[in-house]
Image 1 (cartoon, rainbow, N blue to C red):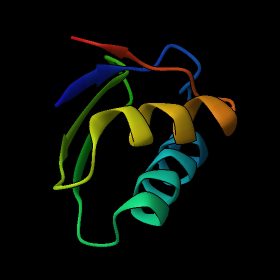
Image 2: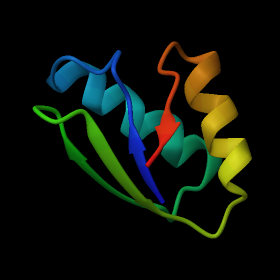
Image 3: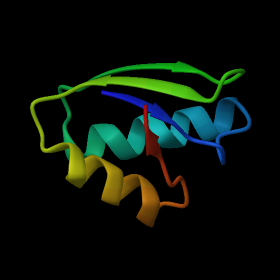
Image 4: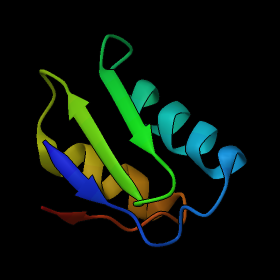
Length: 64
């Protein structure tokens, strides 16, 4: 799944986003480009769970 997270503005945000996704699925593969605010996630977990967790942690995401 490919996401855009406008609230992700720095490396610290990227680490928080990664940690949030890994809390939902510890085996998820997460690739982040902070400059474009794009996150690519490979996960077996339900996408909605990941989106909800990101939103709860202050990083609402839009699926691309």
